[in-house]
Length: 320
Image (tube, rainbow, N blue to C red):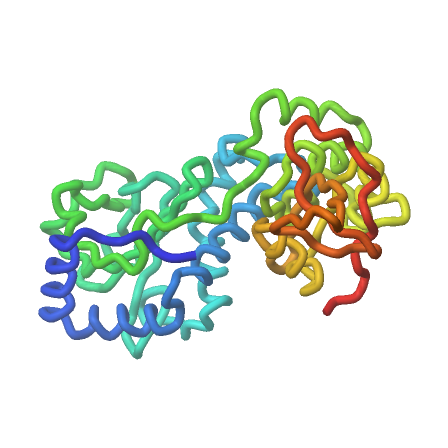
């Protein structure tokens, strides 16, 4: 996962801000050193949203279904989970100490909605935003000065950053991709088909049938199955692999042997805790085909729309 490019003008502005504020520069470079591509930040944000939704117990997968108190608590959970991931020291006056400098952390589910407390004036703030519907996130640094802020009207005197001065934020990663919440992006027809089943196993089978050639995370599996033994429901011996085999569908997990199969078929390789399903068809050895893989002593490739289902091969059970 790579951050999106920032415009040349924004780069010049960022370099100027870093040059005039050595503490800002020190924190910026330390965070870039800890997470050059943003994958660790993105994973924390994905996991935090999933933690708040608690799909296994609630079946929820949309931010809007959270209670107001849960949304209010989200900022605290983001702060805690970032500290756990990066092992930031506690700050003296602010949340963290990064590169020996106090840094406050503020999260908002709406871009620009960071609520800045009066005690953060003069300090550096790590500003974090994520939108699950857009599958985007940002994180940047700003030295909080009173002139950059709107007037506060709430009881705790918290302030927001003036839109005109957001160009003073030095972005670590801006509008970067957030791992997709597959359940949010299914069509209404597919979503209805998945959640119309009363049993967790049937819902999982329908999910792998309808969402093919995409990574499906462990949390999605947990939310759809709503059962404590949800991972067992994916495997063979009565799980989705067995149920969908007659439809020609294979389900690749995070074994390296499965990842190699996915890469050979030019599918996204499952990362830790992920699965990718796909319908395959047998290839005649006399007619060589690109992107084919040998399984169960036969050659297989991706099925095309309209191909009749064939009984799928067994996947290797070993990790390598």
